[in-house]
Image (cartoon, rainbow, N blue to C red):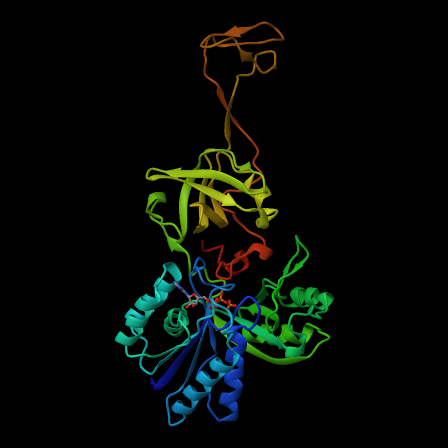
Length: 424
Ligand code: ATP
């Protein structure tokens, strides 16, 4: 095996809600690298971290690049720092870029750190101490919070991954309506799904490849393969210039944020898990359109929520009934409620206990507390108070998965079209 001595570069926290995108900054760096004969090893990486991180702009993503560590490494570092200095949104209080350079092998403790950055909260001090302890060179701009994500973006192993093609706009067009031919997006989805996915939310007629913020991205297409991305880009038509595009290797849609919880009480707030429990009550909708119900196991119970943005998913959730066993996937948010991303029905409770049916064919009614049942039609009485089990028809199916729509999907959530459902 040939071992290449690489320089790893991590960049994070360069954008703000008013503009920029760390992926765009990375694409500019890559262009400058090309101009100077500096080659990337593998694809640039876009790594999504803890979805609950407090200071995220949108999807909590950091970027990492890998180049050969040769006599051009110092020039590469200069290019990276110059571009971060030039393009970051320094005016925004919450933009605190951090750049990390590392020229060794990725160690197990670095991998562990990266998973912590997905599962937990890390402070700037902690990240700084860690990066220094493993021999990284760090550059903090303002508070330098970006180093937390930069070192994670460098270190995360990608046992599962997807790709995203990002097409960038001319800066004159930033903040204006994107000129994307939606018909061509439908065509692209038809021709390339499921190799590409998350293109359109058909239930909402929502074009998911189009960002809704004033950032440099014109569109982003997600896929399992680079070939499908190139095909998709050929099909999507736009009537504004694409000044640049770049394909990132990413942990998006891999469920890497989901930890397997042993039981309900072992889960912590701001963590993302899958856990199995029994439905305690019929799901209820409250003002604002959010839907809630409880699940329990021998260790405790937790409220589960399907929020208003999940739209029709709430209709599916409303079919759950007490006694159903479900495996839910999602995260525990601000209100300590388990925010469901998807669930699998493990076992439906398809038995309902009803009053017995009289010999005359009519369902009997209660004859009073502990007085058995009586028939209103023929007057017959029985002494037993026992209701009888009746198998009812259910709208949900045993072992089937149900997921939130594309428009409400988290970057890290694995869609069903990527799951090996047969195996599960
Ligand atoms: P975009 O998706 O547009 O790139 P963003 O949502 O990624 O924006 P950033 O501007 O990168 O937002 O800000 C996220 C900040 O949170 C960064 O400073 C990053 O270092 C930090 N961060 C990432 N993971 C964690 C974590 N686990 N704990 C604490 N801070 C984190």
